[in-house]
Image (cartoon, rainbow, N blue to C red; front, side):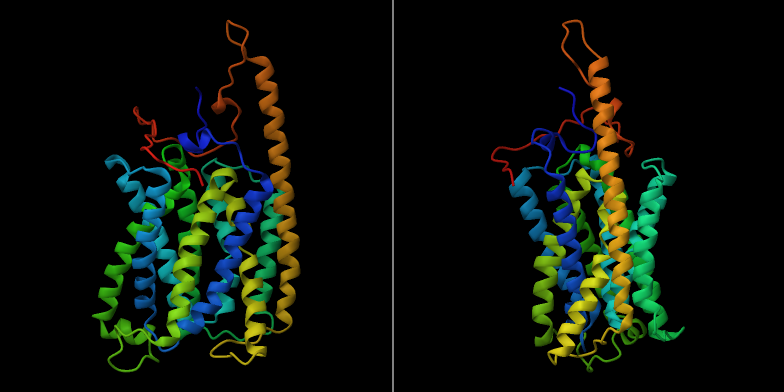
Amino acid sequence: STMAARPSRKDDMAPTPSPYLVHGALILAQLIFGGGAIVGKLGIDKFNPILFAFIREGCAGPILCAIAFWKDRVLPKPRHIWWFAVTGLFIFANQLCFIVGIKLSNAVVGSAWQPSQAVMVTAIAVALGWEKATFFKIIGILLAFGGACFIVFFGAHIEAGGAELAGNILYFLNCLGTALYVICAKPIFKYYPATSITGWSYIMGSIMMMVACLVANNSPAIYHFICDDCPPGSKWHVPTNAIFALLYWIILTSVGSYLLMTWGNKYADASLVLAYTPLQPATSAILSFLLISAGFKGKLQMPGLNILGVIGIFIGLAFVVYDNRIAEREARTKYLQVQNMVSDEKGKTEVSVRAVESLGPPDFNDEDDELELGPGASEL
């Protein structure tokens, strides 16, 4: 039978999920990320951020791989290992840059950077011819990004130097890494289920994080810059205040959010996967307000009138979701038109998915590309 190019072979046999379920998964992932910025900021106080990231990755990577193997019974083929190394590199880069960034800078500022991911993904996808630059898509993303910028810059005094500048540069690299992960994960959906892609990309990223931790802890200059508030002799020490943050980032941010985002990536345009990132600064700002009001200030800052930027964020989201619904209706109409036009010699309709599918990433062009599922593979 004819298989779709984007979902894996196994996923083709399952019914397409409800659009509301897809949107819900993407929204929940971003809410978890938004909360993670604040939890992480509190957790890395007087704690080496790269050690934090290494422990997180070292625990989350094997968990994700175990989930992937239990669900799919699939191991990466040798010729695809390099592709998982690429996606793993971008997961490593985005997570390392973000955790060090919130150590050096404001956590709400870090969350407010995240909507730029959608702008980066759209620019890359349009440049590659994978997506169309529609009016509503571009306007929606720009409105959401504008709202996030309002949260960052209205009434703020950001120093152009030192740790603050380095933090903002790291936030930029964090967002670029996430965008490139989403783009590069697209082609391998033909060969592997979403959970396997997430798990094996993550295990590659965790190996890279181990190397980064060893380098940083053996370089006095790097260590002092990223952790100037750390007590002497604490390079490998995990303080008690970091335990909850580590559990949150391992279980919810690393495992939960990435599984949700990778699964949603199968059924939505690459730009839509990240179009919900404006929810991150809104979540971070609200959580900061609640924690500071309750007396858990730490190094958090109380949001001011800049919180009104969430208005632009949600208006932008409405434009992007509306554009996605238009695209879905057009694709459905095109499918029905081709289905009515193409018939085989027996009078049965044979529809080529490639003929009716919207623009997507190129294939690997492997000859033996059939996905082999082991016995006992489960459906989640």
